Length: 236
Image 1 (cartoon, rainbow, N blue to C red):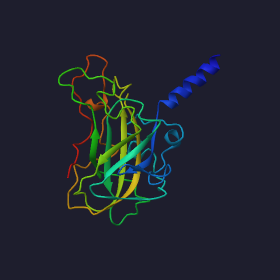
Image 2: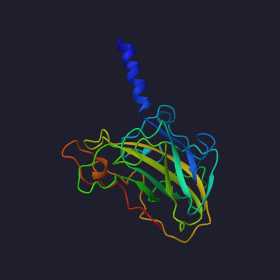
Image 3: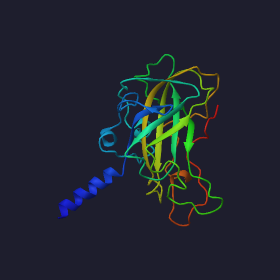
Image 4: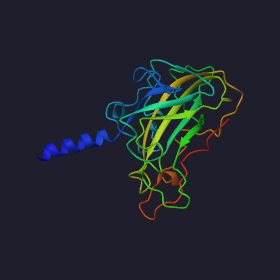
């Protein structure tokens, strides 16, 4: 009986986790998993696990260094999203970062190291108007959703980019180091872009510290406001 209970607990734990294996462009998802999205480590791509160490190299693309099978083409101003397999099963913000691939680098091998990432969008907590925030869908618009979508600024310059989605799970974040990150990186080619200057630029790892206020969700006292971690959203 103890073995059966352990197996059921393991299955439930895996079921409660998730991954982002498929890109969405203007509401249309890719036809299969791991095409433009670089396949993440087995702990995520197979077992749906997350990252908890903000100083780990996995916080960048979750081990997604294997080239994607494709590079998706999008236009500046398009809506770019990711499918969340099993749905986003933990409350917290969902965010999109992008990094421009240098012109002399190959998108299939570039790893996105250094201060090259800028935030394009953040689906964060809804302002409670001074009332206590909760861990439900009313506070967290991305919670239980099967996809997240972000508008790409029309002024984003044309070129090749890595697009990094993350869902920050706060259900165990009562203390520093408790937040979990579910993330993936996709290869995209932006056309019809403008002459904007994206920023501020940050690095992964480096953008977050384990004790950032946006990575801690205390049980008591209840929070009445919340700001997602990382830089401000670049709106173009």
